[in-house]
Structure formats: C-alpha cells, structure tokens
Amino acid sequence: INNFIILINNKIKIYIYIKNIINIKKEMENINKDLLKYKTKYKQIINKLNNNIFLLKAPNNIIKLEKNKLKKTIKIIKKLEKKLTILS
Image 1 (cartoon, one colour):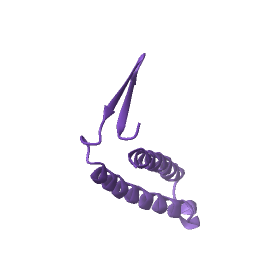
Image 2: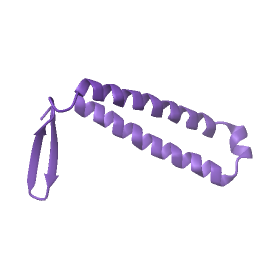
Image 3: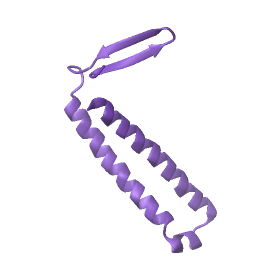
Image 4: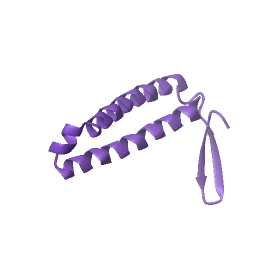
C-alpha cells in the first residue's frame, strides 16, 4: 500500500500508484518547509497566550481570535505530519 493513493467511493476502492507520478522527495521537502512555518506560528501564538500582559490588556475577542488561530494551526500541523507519515 506504500506509494499508493487510495480513493474510496461507495463500494469501489481504487489504488493509484504514485511513486513515479509524484516526486516524493520534493513533496516531503515542501511539507517539511510548511511544517516548520506552522510550528513557528504555533510557538508565537502560544507565547502570546502565555503572556500575562497580553491577556490583561487584550480585548476578549482578540484573545478568542488567537485561540482559534491556535486550533487551526494545530489541525494544519497534524495534517502535515500525517502526510509525511504516508509519504515516508
């Protein structure tokens, strides 16, 4: 099942061989680059949310916005890590 993409539609399961279609090494490099970007963004948001001065001065809607950004960033990181696992 490695090097395949699986498409499932109702009763049909289709395996598409991707090893020669996609440059896996290049794709993994791109994913790692994106992963680094989102992990950096994650750290920035965490630092902001752990900053007591920010929490005291920022309006509630801004704090809520940062918490939503954090949730979205975590989802993206998990998706990218899953893609890396599938490709490796």
